[in-house]
Image (cartoon, rainbow, N blue to C red; front, top):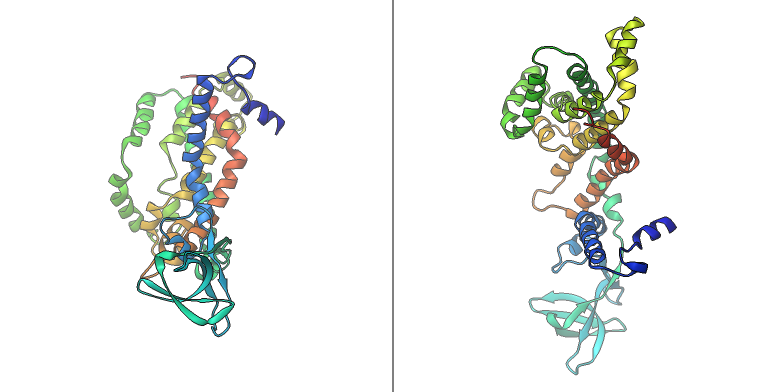
Length: 352
């Protein structure tokens, strides 16, 4: 923490004096933090709000719940309000019911007299309360564990297949010299400019003919080979000296052995970057699984969240709670492996 404090306390001015550059830098960083993490903080805080709290306008940042109290003569607890009375004094009253623009209210200490109070003269009494029932009750309404299992299977399997296919293609395009090599690489990179909406129907027809509708393989296989992965791995493999491969061939190693025992270990940083990207792509994928999977037992978490809503209204407090749980695994993976992104990308593309 001391090192972080010294880093944040750096100034360009003489003897730590503030300069225009310092002000602009810190302003830029603060705005960037708010833009990047503000929505995430809002999501997490809102996941602890009640359904009524979520529908309030203007909305509140913190999960504030209406304070209730037990009143003699009433079976249910009544909400408390701070009320301005006719004489200008303030009192804390409990609301029995609201009729139009008037509220029937009683003093919790003397509930015999019912007062008619205009609703604009009352302010709800609130307290900070975390609605943890949003998480506990969601498991009885949302098959989280099954959807989690499906998402893990799709993400892990697709990532492994992506690493194998892309690394093989990158090895061929970087270490073998044949006619049309650069053209093939250009065609692969050009596919990045094709919108996914253009290929949805053809790919769906192929998956349907194969019989992978409502099958996790229909989600895993179509996106196994990615042009981004081929590009990253090819550029990195170009930096591996060809002399190492020639030495392996002289020692009698086959091409497969050279690939698995020389190229793959040396390409570990780039493979780690591609693995992180693939995990994030597959975990957050929504459109294609939504098209291929129509039976709930095969839903991934993203598709399950989309289906987790009532017929007449969306239960946002449950949806937000499950969304936070859905984000936790990918956030954990990214936080543990994010250091490989900078090192892997920094060493990619050094040699053209």
